[in-house]
Image (cartoon, rainbow, N blue to C red; front, top):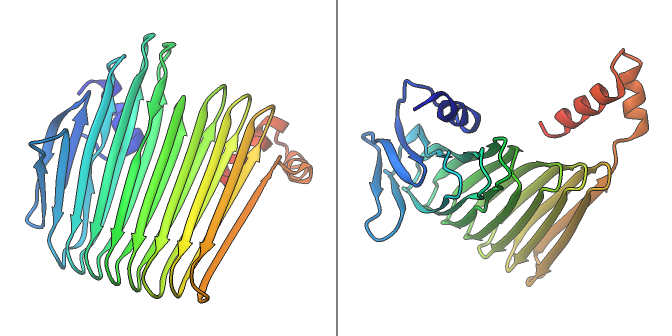
Length: 305
């Protein structure tokens, strides 16, 4: 890979030239490098674009990388990845997409990921999105994530939009069985005329299932963000959804919560807060010698950490 491609790869994953462990690297719509291990098998789909990832039961602490990079302007890439995680496995999956676009045609990646976690399985899933380039063509990312958790399974999902993404619609749907836990943390920053929409739909079907969804975002200039969350509590369960946003300039942030309790023992909470950077925060940092711009950047970076 050339220097641009390696830069994209570094932005969205911790991979370097010395690839190790299980991985599948996708470039401009095609798989270019793949490796499997004793406990992790990666199979290229025959009936669609994408891969199936199989993790053996009782696998412990393996890391799986599945990054996507796009450098072709005008490419619309769609990939279907299915993850089958065996009983009591405990693994980390690092995904994400980086787009470099120096031309006038839009480049787009749509990743459809489905997770099937068996009893007692645990997964840490990290997905980073990044865009760059001097062209007028847009950098578009529309991930769809579907999750099924069997008894006692846990999925912790961190999604990060670093910068440079002109348009994104992120859709996540989850079905939780008994004693399961879904933790989702998203961080989004938009500027210019960028748009970002997040849609969460979680169904707490099993007893003692729980979810904690946290969205932290910063919208600046004329960008627009929309956060939609819907949680169904169908039994004894717990949910906490939190949306916090900082808004600057003439940006717009919209939060639309919906919690539906279909059982008297469902405990569902939603919190939302949208506002500008507090003046006292700026003053405090400026008294330490920072300029107003530096103080703002420090606050924003801390907020999105």
